Image (cartoon, rainbow, N blue to C red; front, side, top):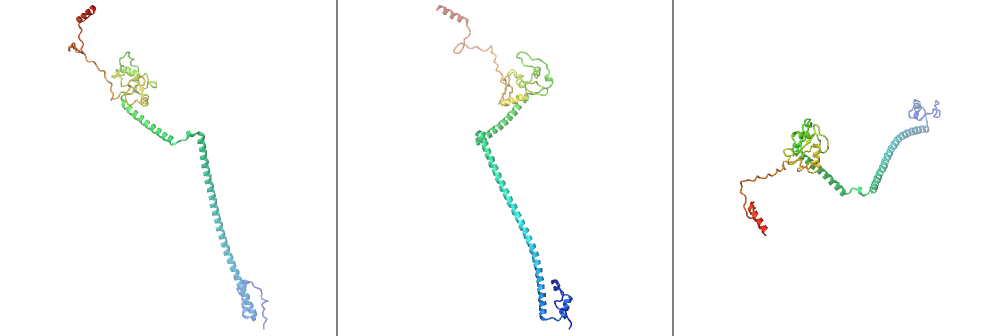
Length: 305
């Protein structure tokens, strides 16, 4: 019988080599006469090696999966912590800002109250003061409207009294006449050289001048010879509140504007006595005619007494 190598003389194999049997092991397994104990030992060794290697593989897989799950869980936890930190920080900053704003408002109100107390109660606007201010504003607006209406009516009434000065009006054609005679047309033109009676400025070419309608043919009723700039006399009439009826000249106090509703009143003339009319005779309430004989008799009676 040939000498077969024993188990101890075989080269040592690793666990990987045991999992994949080589040709040598297959040859020994087929041809080597081994005992039952040796066969059982080999079987147990192979089984234990295979189970050990399988257990190591499972541990490696479980360790790799556990590492991945642990890293994911740690990342999620860190993200949640960051979110909670940001939310908490935002809440803290918001509460601080609201508290600071409220404190500033309270401080401003206290400063305003202190300032009002220093200035005194007269600067505090009460409801009565506000109502008075509103009424004054309404009165001012109403007065402005009334002035506009007065000015419009006055310009309409004086439309025939405005004359635009020309170069010919400023030439001294005639001199002023003496006495109470009314001025001629030439003298009216000469009056333009005297200037406005309000602003005392001389008239120029293109100026709108207001003259009195009481000039001829109404000169006898109201002899006003004053001339004014339109922008001087109209505001004066409006401000003096006399623009509604017969405004008067501010210099001579004669009627300067005479509307159509108030024409000048003509003077009444006495009727001439008719020489052919019968004279009243003696009686009650009647005067007797002059009789010289009767007067002589009365004088003689007085002497006798």
